[in-house]
Image (cartoon, rainbow, N blue to C red; front, side, top):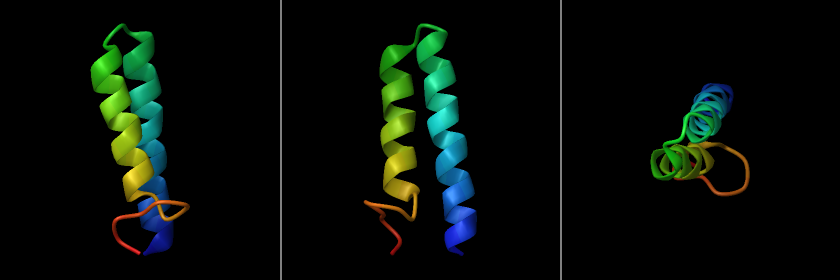
Length: 47
């Protein structure tokens, strides 16, 4: 389960970075924050 959460978090953070590069800064920040909340490391909503 932790591995799946880690993959989802990584995808969200990468999508957030790509979104910021494309110029949608607020949406990119939201994706990165959600990715950090979902991820099993540090802060996590599921562990």
